[in-house]
Length: 247
Length: 247
DNA sequence: TTCGCAAAGTGTACAATTGACACAAAGAAA
DNA sequence: TTTCTTTGTGTCAATTGTACACTTTGCGAA
Image 1 (tube, chains in turn blue, yellow, red, cyan):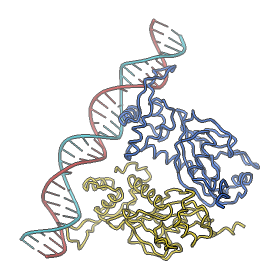
Image 2 (image 1 turned 180 degrees about the vertical axis):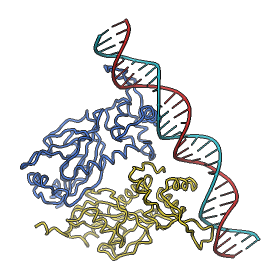
Image 3 (image 1 turned 60 degrees about the vertical axis):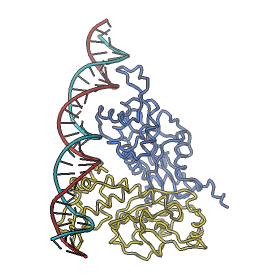
Image 4 (image 1 turned 90 degrees about the vertical axis):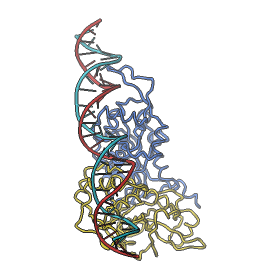
């Protein structure tokens, strides 16, 4: 009796993910190219899907993330619920929903998440809800399906606030990285320039990065030192509140 | 055809409110006394209800708040969605749900909100979901129905963080208040003592309070100056990011 | 081989903010 | 008039933030 609900979809609740990546220059978001329907153009949307009846919300978001990227154990945090009764009722969205949902008129509340991935780890996967996915720079995102632009903005805002107080930026970088890369990452997320010397001083004083005995090779300029992220220190910072990262 | 959904309840989605108040001494939460059922004790829960099909999430939270307190236009902010598939399945909770819900087994995802009210404005109302409500001090809250304790903790955490960067504490106070009252408010929310002189200095420098030509009367000690909240300055601070309130 | 290029890496001085700390003033009540 | 209780005030030292420019390294082109 309970089991009849297992692995049935809940038609009223979905999860959507804003997946951030960093190519050492720009902050990017992984978006789905929605198939054009009935004379409407191709449009971009966030990856997302209805949840299963027996599935926790976080699990649903993890599933979507994993189906699309092949990755597990990725930084993932809830942004919030979006439930405007008319969030799916634009004509272009309705046309598309008619093609894929049993009840395209059904009101769906979505729970939004954002996650941070190292773009090098990403391997495109065939997934149930997406044929093609692509990384789009944040400053090129201007229109998305449904209310996804609003969701994306809320996620970016949350990321900005979070990175000011917790060292989560490492999730966007490979294990070895240079301080210049980290510096650039903070600049593109916060949307403003940060003084190089002050930035380095702060990172080194907080001891969340650790210098490696290894340098860049083959670059046409002074090679930079590689660093790694100091996990011990990170955990203690998270525990102790770590109220002021200082940006 | 669309209209058949109007004002029908959505059986899968609810909204719950963590309503904070301040009695000039302690931080309080407005809780519902759930009727005892079948040998289970009285228990406390957050005010909440299923949402209507044509109702925005924020509207649903506002409705719950208004039905319970009689208040409109109150500070209200989303905490997030809580959707553990087993969040309603404790025996005591099921016994209670059987008495009030058509499908007590239905999985319900709830969207949590927190709000800040001036306790003096509060007038208890008869509401569809509550016979009696009462203010409980935060340090006396230890067990709540469903997953409401978890929700309450998340709301309190959000309030703590928010008050560090934005001057929202005024929502908990009457129009005229003393700096000592504001000081105490910050202490009970943040859960630690704050130096009196440093606190006053900061508030006055930020210019979000404005001195009135009025003093306390009838108190058996030096009467204190009344202040009011400077709304102009507040808005500009909100606009300009106001990144560091400094606690 | 030398020169130019491009990015890495480094220190100092001044301003602003934080945090610690103690005593006089006001009014009510006894 | 004395006592009680809470208000209200200033300074100094330590820390943190901010602004700012030149040398170093290695590659590649001439």
